[in-house]
Image 1 (tube, rainbow, N blue to C red):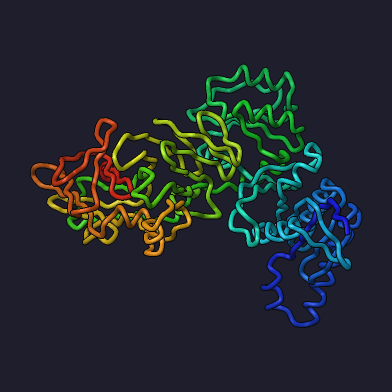
Image 2 (image 1 turned 180 degrees about the vertical axis):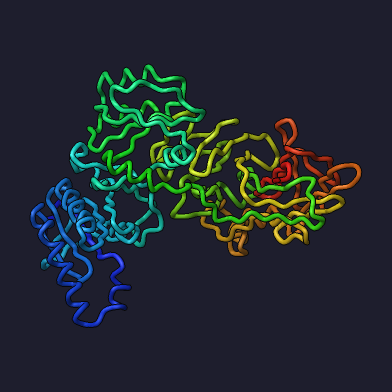
Length: 507
């Protein structure tokens, strides 16, 4: 039986399980009846063919990818009109129909994307983006999803934007919260811009001379700080605008105003600030200040590895919520954008773009700037620097330990479990390390590795562990601390995969 090119759509009634738990049988029947009566008409109007009804969800096929997304947007708008709250996902590709049911890789992909789609949103695959009329559908990238059951690798996902919603980029949200967002309409004079201003151009036609003219008259600000508000835009105009390093917010003016009025602070770290100060006064704070990148290949065990950056600034082995991924190979450190919004050398990185980092490069993400320092060292290839909220105070006469399990008072070095970020070398040595639970954190950091102690002579970095080396960055080079080494404010200590920065005490 020949396959057919179709867009497969899955709808889902959000919070269905919780609703069932609060409903008797008559209420449940009414809920499912309301669901069917509200969902089926928009699907039929746009050419959808229902394949199956699963009670709280429908599987539907469309010959047109554009019609499929239009139907999904119509479904999502039901909530604004007092209807049910839905989520919708889709993928486009070859489908085989057998006995009225549909099968194929894109059926599975649409179902898996639905499992990650938030309520009230429409997500779709890259294949759907390519097949639909992009100038007719308001859309924006979501990022890349990994770990989808039955789907190899990671998939790039996009969302359609309903007329009553705007999804604020972090840079714009932060500028609004800091009163640095300047909304500039057609015909309005360019005002004096505050430091760090983000300019949002509204009402300008994409690709127009008027738009180019106002950009040319703009004061000297980074291209990444100039955004345009568009709801529907031709692919060529979008590509040209983004290629100049600018940003796009997809939405209507009224929806943007609502989003800005309800904006909340973007940075809400899940890490708590930890200050240990036994004597009540700190002479220096030790701050977790970044990620150290060990050199590869490593002892016939690790040929390359990755770490994922979360929106709150934490580095983890692997996460579906990551905004970026750094990969360390022999002689190169590369960064890949996993979600939109990363700024690199004054431009936004499209999702999926990979750049090779050079020393002093800075990548700006949701939690702020991350600076890369390249190293020529026997053990490390580079450092990714950004202070976190985790800090420990060093009091007068106090000795503060660093390690995976330091004595008190102490600062615990990161101990990330799991091996999914490691690419192994061939051979028995790597096989034994893999079986033995090898991780970079545990291989390079001891339970009690080093200490910073204060005395009348000042601050000293003291090596404790006899095998795990401790380093300090001086004049752009790592110096191994074999015994004791004087340190002061601004020093960077490298212990395992953790960079610890010496900072002036808070308050």
